[in-house]
Length: 401
Image (cartoon, rainbow, N blue to C red; front, side):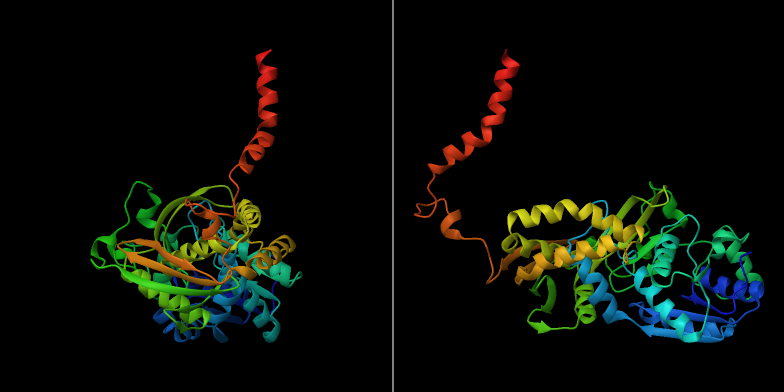
């Protein structure tokens, strides 16, 4: 066991893992434990957290509303970068971890705690994300990761431990899903989902109806952007958190944003996850559509070439790393021109582009037209092509010898 801490701040959700961890920390270290829960948009899931943590022995409980900060300072920067991990995942869990860690360190300083604890397993990405952030913000902090030290090394054992301690948990042996919910998404892992051939049960989903059950009539929504960030929906100015919540409601109604993938974890293994990201799916498509009008070609291509690298930074946990901050600054400089309106068509699981416009549009119909014009001299294309073909011609001549 590492040096005994004097006081611990635990990232606490009230779920299976952290409910057991709270009791285990108190039993193992016999020191005060502060329970901290970040409100990132879990809704009614948070209602029993305070009472549950206090009943479990927490000396103090923090339930901090971080919804606006989460969307404004973490979700929107990632969306300005048009970032998707492995072409599919919109990073809903990944982008939340640095904010939770940041606030956890702030509480540790306030409470005079010398240690922080989390409920991430020794097989997952979250342990890396939390701890890289902890160390980046407080280099000498003590970190306690029970999953890497105790003998409760399966969810079955956790459930048995919880039952022996009389700890109520929102997981059953029949549906042992591990879930993570915030304003950007909800994720599901574990249980029957560990078989990648098994289709998810329909009653598992919480944010969206199935596309088959979605309305038979399409719905249109207009989103206004300023400097790469969405600011209005259908003309209504909304805060970042309210705007994302609004798009979640619209997208979920039409069965948009369900993703089922096998992803590559940072620790080396593959993992199957199912995600619901209705509002984020709409925002990503709308943002890319507006960029197609307003971003210079080379700026867009350079940024797009960096998307896999940026996605890895976020997914792996390097939010507070200098390379992520440098890249974000470059991306944000390019996003200054991403202003305008996108009209989206929502219908049975699809979010398609129905229109886009911008006062800063680089699209010029006088140049792009197939009709007669006086701007573009088509004869100029011959020299352009011959110059670009020069190396190909030289190679062909050499091969012909």
